[in-house]
Length: 126
Image (cartoon, rainbow, N blue to C red; front, side, top):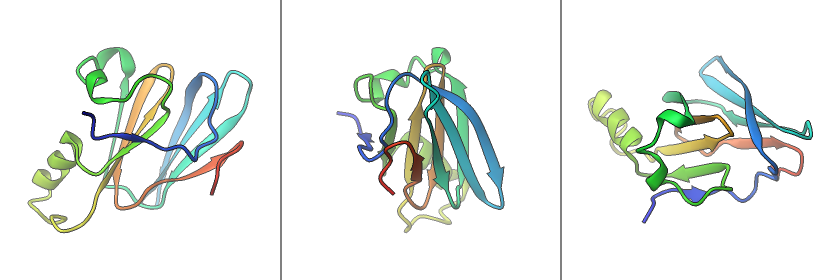
């Protein structure tokens, strides 16, 4: 069973493409757009780590994720979170960390943060 759960409050629809990632002042914004030109921003006020990869090279990740169609996933335990905890020498051992995965047509973008992202855009529920 996968530790990831789909966020159902995104309003995202259609095939999504990664438009950009903006990192500034400790926060990160991931921008995605569908083929109809609708766009969404996945906003983190603070992050601990970001990982971006071409989805074609993440073949070992696929079994950990829910069926296709999911776009934004979250988990409170994952190998990425375990790696962050190890690298930080336990600095955040007692804090809840959230591993967010943004799936687009060609990319898998991952963020580890202290809080869930705010999603803004067409049909999103803030």
